[in-house]
Length: 437
Image (cartoon, rainbow, N blue to C red):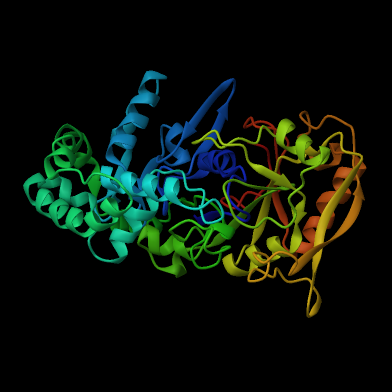
């Protein structure tokens, strides 16, 4: 069988939830390998809309084992509230199918406090645009070796000592930002009822996932956020605090890189970004409003409006390179319906001349890198009923071929609507065959 990594090829929000949900029909194990509850994935099954934040998208498949890997940061309260929300919707047995790495780090109330205080106090041009979920501070604790792993929930007395040390380290920051340092008891006591439910889910997920690969099971490693938000490869400092690129998948899942067979990159037919940071192809005109309104471009976790703009092919090629993307899944092609002309950024003009590379170190400086566009014809036909490529309008087929040729990777999947069945599968990375789900 196969081990497949699914990554976002833009600034996140590419529609990974739907694509992963489709692929989980063929997966025995689905693993979230990085990030936390700031990464919402929207799943539409029939007329039901489900948003998952921590849980892997495979949680809707009752035969699938789901894993929160060691590269994640996990808020215990959010995790259990998400499980309870699914249970209220009739999806039971989630805890029995979920394994949580005992090496994943915990997001605790002081992380959320610091995140909120920092973002609220930052000057407008320095605010990162975080979701204020405590993600960044939790990863800070992990890197400076004052973090608390999920395995500590097995011994709350020992955890209290760790919290005391962490609070001592954070106290100067909290005080300087005008906050009040919480007590150890206020952090630990609410964890007691949560720990009773979470501890049975804790395990060595690194071994679990590697054993699954060795047993020739189908394993799907699910990314959060996107390439251009990667802490190393993204538009720093307007990035997340983890490595959502494909290279982060083996590390976050706890397996060797040679276990991965295929990398699928998810890209919208246009580009969006939520929060602050450079966005060279952003469109503030009627075209941008069309993309935002028709595409319903609002964050699934925060509800924040996403910024919208034209497809950036140099950025897509950059994502192909740093992830080693083997094939693309193109989402929201239907959103372009009704636009008479489509612009695509194919290169940049810089002080050193024209380049088809993504000038990631320049785009944060106004005027340093100017997008160069090519224009293609649009279409007016409704795409929601398309199930094979030949049913697409000729202009839509030309647009797809243009992307494949310029990105230099093939298209494996095309999404023409939010539902599972509004999809064209050209090739399945698990079976090697075409076919709609």
